[in-house]
Amino acid sequence: MIEITRIQAWAFRSPTKKPVATSFGVMHDRPAVLVRIEDRDGAFGWGEVWANWPAAGAEHRVRLLEMDVAHLVLGVSFASPTDFFQKLDAQTRIRAVQCGEVGPFAQVIAGLDIALWDLAARREGLPLRRLIGKDAADSVPAYASGIQISAAQDLMPRARVEGHQRFKLKVGFDMDADIAAVHRIQVDLAQNELIACDANQAWSLQQAKDFLSGIAGVPLHWLEEPLPVYSDAADWRSLADHATVPLAGGENIIGRAGFDGAIKAGVLSVIQPDVAKWGGVTGNLAVARNALANSRRYFPHFLGAGIGMAASAELLAGAGGDGLLEVDVNENPLRSMFFEGGEPVSGGMWRCSDGPGLGIRGIPEGLAQFETLCAEMR
Image (cartoon, rainbow, N blue to C red; front, side, top):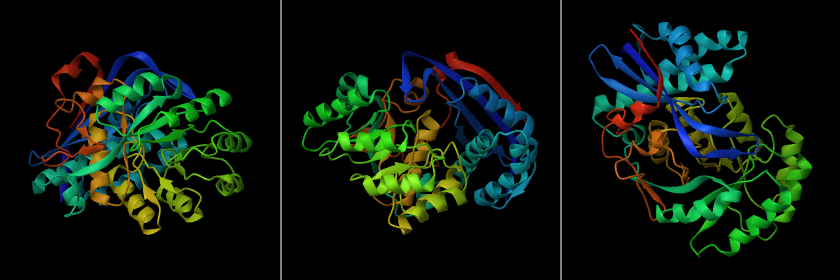
């Protein structure tokens, strides 16, 4: 049994030299919410809560954990991380609906779930991936993400130096310019390189079809979120029938039922849950296994700090399959300071930590300058 007796949470904000733009908005700083839990025996675990949006999201998530969730966790015994996730999800469901904050509650639970899995793996003296699967690989294929297409000429060379061979371009800004840039970038790729595109839900059905027609002949590895997640199933089916490249999505799906439905529909070839946004390790592992059992690919989505990055890598390695790990290549000390010498990417592969759990010992001292809020719950 696991009994949590202490929870700590921190909000951070790191200034950006250049804003990170998506089709739906711009991030003017890089936020993060990190959590640490401790059990009655002094064992501990680290987790991360998704907090990219809205602009005030990071501090809100810390307060939500402190005032609405912590009392449901402290001093309560749980048989396993899975037991914890299921109970807390059920206990907070009405609250989340009552205040219209299903996402924030799910994100707080996800961060706590990650921390509990980290704690459980540390207890066993195992890297998290080996607690998930004893034959888990030590490295996973990775790709460079967060590349706004107009900034590709600056970010892609830097990503290559960092060891990347695969690149995801953010599109959905200007149709003609985006299409022209995709063709131009494809021509300049080395033989072992590939590109994918992410529209961040920018388009209507017709616009998505226009983009696909415009890039005809480009061997795009996948097209991510071409339509809003709430689009009619008929529109998704129509686009899939039209597409000659795989469609991907999942970061904005919440709940097992939502993922089960998306996998069953057969429209998405690539399933992309975010470990810090919904489900934590418990939910994402179940989705990954369901996706792989139904001949879909599992590519964990992530665009946050170092703890969630490590959790995504451990999950992918533990789940198996031929998925790719998303690695943001925009400057973000909240991510990079967790990895001595920089992110461990070489030859297009991410090297997982050999340490127990997530391999995270604590918050790097250099991040103290970015702290905006902290809370301790006992």
